[in-house]
Length: 54
Image (cartoon, rainbow, N blue to C red; front, side):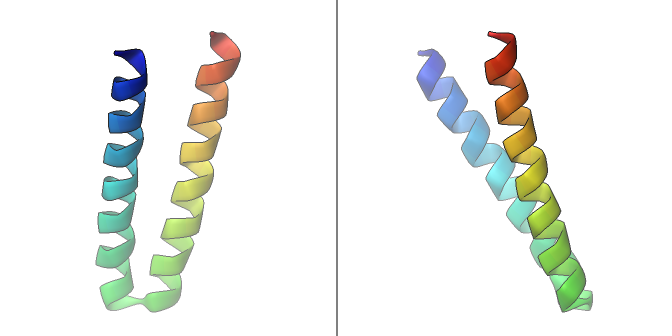
């Protein structure tokens, strides 16, 4: 069950990131790309941090 929760958490974070990047991208395309890139780095960092504490 933990794997399902992890996948759902990942999908949820990616959808929120996509929505934020699209919202910023509507007004300023380079900003939307930047938000998307930084968001992916943040998600990657969170996943690595979660694995290192287990």
